[in-house]
Amino acid sequence: MEGMELNNNNVKIKATEQLIKEKREKKRERENQLSTYSIKLQSPVMESFFV
Image (cartoon, rainbow, N blue to C red; front, top):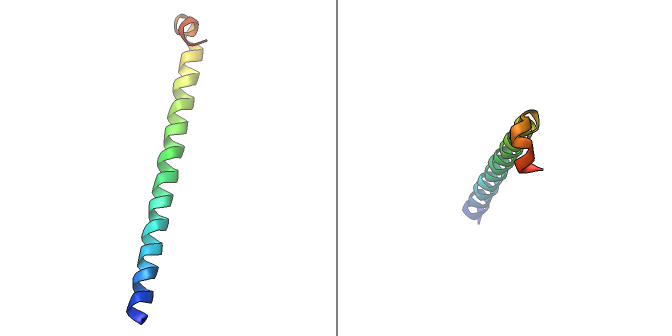
């Protein structure tokens, strides 16, 4: 049983690391979208396409 317990903890740690990685990727995507959006807003020619 102790072996199972240890294995279970490893799985939990891996799952947590995966969650953290996914959150970081989502945050990076959101920041990229925001910076792209602000660039679009700064360019008057592009503005007409994206409004």
